[in-house]
Image (tube, rainbow, N blue to C red; front, side, top):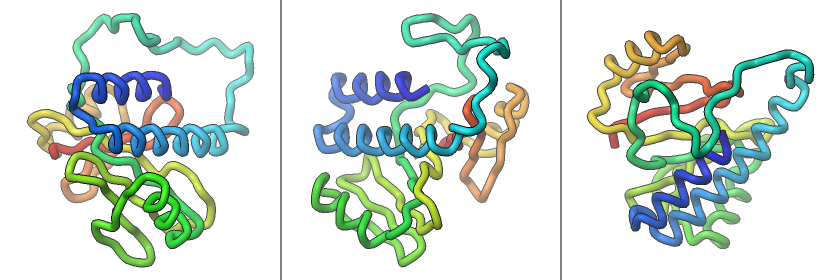
Length: 174
């Protein structure tokens, strides 16, 4: 999954839909997500002899239409142990600025196309990542995800569902 996200982010940059600053922010967030994801599922890996069907890898075509068509990475949300320390890190090294927030959740951005959310937590991990979807409708999204055999969860106009490694994906219409 991480390599698919990496390819998508780089493609967005190469097609001029992401600035260099957005590219760096997205890649740093993806790297943090990869580390957090490995830490979170490390003890939950299936035995080597358990056969599980593989998802198509980059370059292979899926045989059916996608449930949604992502138009871009909207944001990444991380759980962090010290919001002030993390805020200072992302401001210093990526030029992000505080958009809004408080001492429990902080939203950082460089412009309107991408943002990073930091949630105060006991341990660091990726909280979720979010894709923008064309013609997003929360009711329709929940229905489509349920029909696809996923476990959608809706909070207001936000729709979440698990990826194959149980990482949380959010979709939005922004």
